[in-house]
Length: 367
Ligand SMILES: [Zn+2]
Image 1 (cartoon, helix red, strand yellow):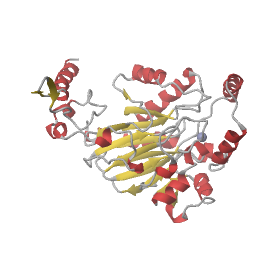
Image 2 (cartoon, helix red, strand yellow):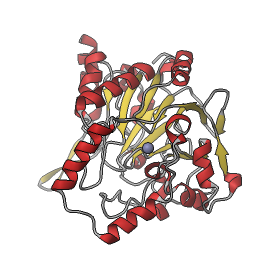
Image 3 (cartoon, protein in one colour):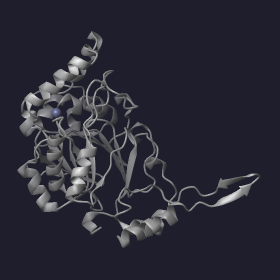
Image 4 (cartoon, helix red, strand yellow):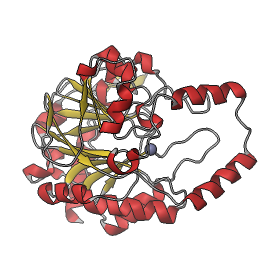
């Protein structure tokens, strides 16, 4: 407790390092912000506050503006800064050391969904696109964005079979199984695919909720149905997606900072358990919420994920929804994982809002 209070005091001292000068009748702030961004672990990692080099850096627009680097926004000024942006469903943009990695690619969702604030056609820069699985709400824009950016697109066999029918150069596509021994390197990003498992919420439950929603909302127009059918065409419904087509990605930066990404809220597999036994914990978990509607079920699944990956910072995914559907509540998950481990930091932000990390502070370096 004393430590925490000490950290708070130091932070109060640095964050509010605002000098005022008197010009005419008013007070004008001279130095408004005393650090480039607020790392969500600031309360936990005391050294972040004592790092004078970090605190002295100017405010970094890449860590404040809601504009993706892949659509023309700023890249972090410090190459050791990782900027993470969630862009709906299980999409994330990771920017680090001048490189851009996209996780999933489902941007043009149609008029039944809230806008993400950009279109697939706006995504012009990316080095790699990692597809968790081949359902349309995870890969529908992978081919077009991959072709435009020249990014390598990575996915399970059932995912890349679908890509092979789409307009993208097969030389850009990498097939992975996640059964061990596969390591991909994209600049400072080391990527290890790990076979996961798709979510499988009980049909009885899902059907009942879907029927209630259908009975209480405005039905889609024929145009909207056609629009959705066209988007759905750009993904696969192959049954193999569930058992051999859902890939989790363990991403390790060049300084040891670790991220676990999982784009579907299914059970943890033996492959994931083995990978986590090897590395222990991760700094950040980007983890899809189960589609089981009821908090009792989504909480139980989130607990299994968090107990396996042991992230310092838990960032949920796949929790937003179409206008006529329900967002999956994140607060019950946050409360449950904190009841398990009060040190866990939970972060959920709006579309495109950045969360930045000073990655030199990471678990593998003992911080
Ligand atoms: Zn799916």
